[in-house]
Image (tube, rainbow, N blue to C red; front, side, top):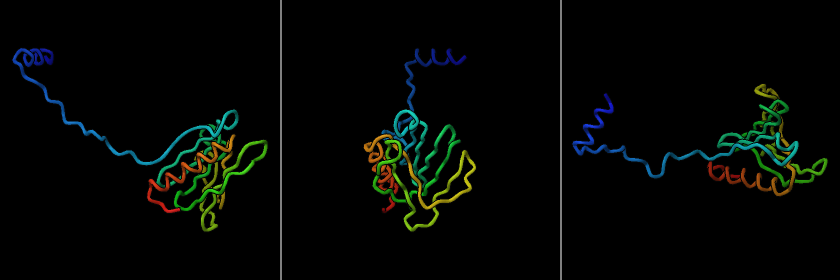
Length: 143
């Protein structure tokens, strides 16, 4: 039945107008979501962020740990040498309060005033610190 209707339209010279497309498309919210702060054991770290929170999960589904850091309330210190040759990037609450929520999986019951994200290299740590700074700017959050 539908095929017959298209056949009639084709024979009659009728044209089908497509709905106008938005050339820009819908604006996507600023943010990121990726796995890995390096190779090996570092590949089990998941980092995501939006205008509300930077989330660091460790292990599948954050089974080994999770920290949810409110973007507007944290700052990143300069990365430094970590244990076993890695690099640590420390995030802390601006006012020193325990603004960071911690836990495992979806059981987020603890609070802390700082949190360390491990990276394999200094370049990766610096790049992530810059990414968080750029997210704050995109979200209109002063640092």
